[in-house]
Amino acid sequence: MKRLIRYELSKLCFRRAVLLTILVFSMLNLSKIRNVYQSYSYLANGTGEQSWNTVYWQLYPQLSGIITGDKIERLMKRYRPLEEATADLTASTALDNPDTMTGNLYSDCNLLDKYYVRPMKYFYNYKKTAAQIAERAKSNSIQFQSIGNQFEGRKNAVIYHRFAQREIPAFGYTEMYNYLVNYDFSTVLMILLCLYAVTTVFVREKETQMNLLLLTSPGGGYMTCAAKLMAVSVFSVGIAIWFSLLDFIGFCLAFHTGEGGELPIYAINNFANTPLNMTLFQYVLLSAAVRALGMWSFCMGMLAFSMKWKTALFPFAINLSVLLALIFQGASSQFYSNIWEKIWNPYVLLVNRTLFANTEFINCLGYPVLGYQAALILSMLTGFLLGGIILRCYTRNQHHVPGGFGCEIRSL
Image 1 (tube, rainbow, N blue to C red):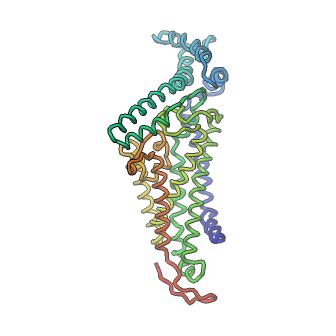
Image 2: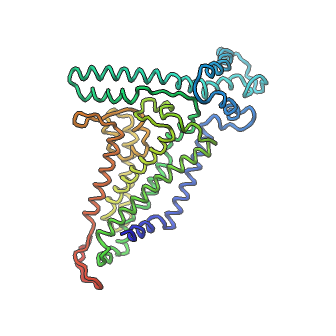
Image 3: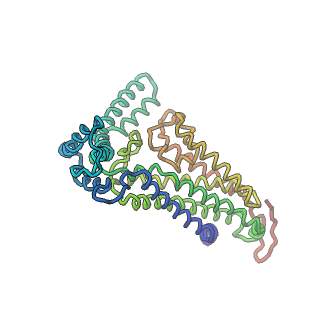
């Protein structure tokens, strides 16, 4: 069985066309990440002495780390005069002012406001915000349980325990991680690559009629199908992990830092209401694992749709159409209030920030289950169900006579 799996994996992964596609897509992905930095980060404006990049990292050692009153006061001593000077828009617009950090008063004010004042204010106030959410949830839990609404009572109890004692004690750089968790281009590349590689797993043997010959072998039929499923599983998970790793390395290289990974995930504004209590770096690892599960579930579906066809064109067109429909539904459902419309689609695991950004629940026999937990369970069940259907429907040996061809072949 191990030899069969290795053989099927080699046919799937080590074809020249697949390897070339992986290489091209990887380079395209890195180029896109570089473009994200150049297009959206204000720190990409050069490395001169008065560039935002240089000034930001000069100030960073003084203001990063544990948030203290001294650091806040030090920051505001720099920011308040700039805010007052530029408030009525009558300050000098000279670009070579020697008394400024970046050469311009407005530029100094905008730099401090965007990269220090607003983030530090959010970090400092988050403890109070989380405490208010926790207290409100605690009060709601008591109230709902008193009137017999067990589900709402339990749900609010979970919210209380998730948000109680939350705080962001240290200030750090989060821009790189903010763009990383909102980056979707690699997801498109993963889907296209798996669509190209997986759709032809069963079709190639039928085009050469090798499927009939396989049924005369003791390793044909069920064993071959199981090996193909294992090979596709390894391939899909490997592709998802590879592109997740490439995303992280690419963003670290493009932004010239991996700083901020030790901060909690809710240090990013979009994740202020997340149910997760982990660091940004831990979230990157979790996201990679979740994307791998979603890609595996997608690939099981691609195999199921392609196993009955004898040419590659029709299954490719069908799989592409289904994928486009799922992507469109998944992209639209992130704005829906009904959590079920989000979690049934495996696409939500590939862009999982929509799952983890908010604390949402489903009612499971009166017990609250977090939306992302339900999505993971549904995706696993879907993948295993599709794998079972493929095994059940695959043509299998009826008789086998060692050393001969005395077997009954049931053709697809």
